[in-house]
Image (cartoon, rainbow, N blue to C red):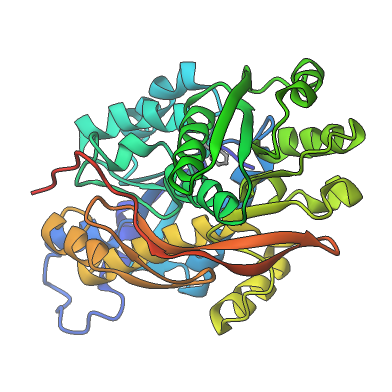
Length: 400
Ligand code: BEZ
């Protein structure tokens, strides 16, 4: 992925572009500052992981954003789009500094971020202060659309609560009595573990234990060795990307009796590498294989043509981030500063997503179906709906 792909725009080019098609302007008319601003490309910062365990997730989000912009003819709301890409390396410790670079040095108009919940928190600190329009294209940290919500921050993915709570509840409904949860020890793992426990207990099950290791470690053996002695009926897990591939393979090799399950990131975009080790794993997620709505069919084909590989839930998040931005910019006629029109349209958006129809909640997170999936024949086959049109509670969010 290229970095900082800033195109040079001359004043002459700006004027040419501003005047193009504007027959009403006479040769002697001086273009207004508004016309010049509208003619400038809109700078969209992509702060995503392009290296490390989440690299493929960041790449798929990027491909899908670019795909939708290309489908729109390269412009959104009449504005050409210029991307500024930054590899955040999934490192929370440099997240704030990276976000500041995009906002203050590169002057991006919009920031689309990221995969890792801890990195997103760094972005959040910067954009809550700067007021930069931000669309979260993966990271699920609950508080961003709960007590720390902000009018300039929208999310097109999920909260960590949504799929994990649904999985815990579905497990209990299935008659599972006890379960443990294994994950990386950072915001996403902690929040998904807590939500899984909440759902399991709501359904009458008992939560045994949370087992963790540091992100992005993959030394799973000490944890796997503890599981048999817990005597649980099932084990939930949150891992994603490269870490999920290795965990699922090692879990199968350890021949642990308790079946593996979890929020669907465990088997999303990873089945080719996981092979038979993933067979039968049940997960809950807001996307899955076999969703045969027309939008998804077209999306799968277009994504494959662009990226040369299959789409997954991360690609869907990116695609919908671009769809949401397009809706806002079209309503505002490309004027990114017209917050009233921009935010009203984005808050009221009804998006035809490859995952099915979605809307935006009062706290600016996605309202969506959570599907039950089972790995069969190398696919995350949708086998049911765990929750229909599920909204995160958005606890503590007060937007005027
Ligand atoms: C997160 O850190 O929020 C996250 C990362 C990968 C997949 C899902 C959630």
